[in-house]
View (cartoon, rainbow, N blue to C red):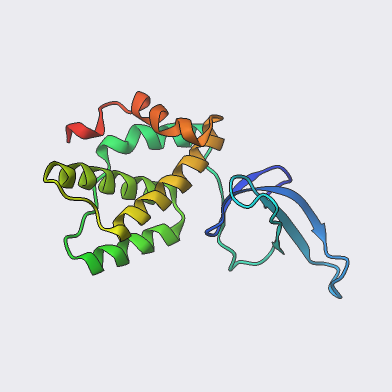
Length: 171
């Protein structure tokens, strides 16, 4: 169970902070506790409420600082997941986004960053779908790592480049 002030990854909303855990005074079932969440980076006027015991809610704790640092250190060894077929690639990449797992986001960003680099050398660009997926994965990853590392989302990319053992471009 999460506590008040914990940061979590919630669905496609992204990083949220649990601002309260309370029983719903309007419900006939006064035994049900609810998490009250506020998005950290997205629509800050939004409030999200759902039952604590609902197993169908896509929520997980954000990475700890140690987990974030381990993830960053593992980037050079992570395999890329490029698939030449646009439809199959899009299907796989969207499925990875839906898992809301940091390691998946890193694989997507690394794969698409390297592909973008390779295609630009040939005077080409990524497809709009690939570009959109890279932006979404990068946004989610930067937001999570910013909280874990206590830096702003804009600082995450340079932080990663300074802290990975070898530069990704050397692959």
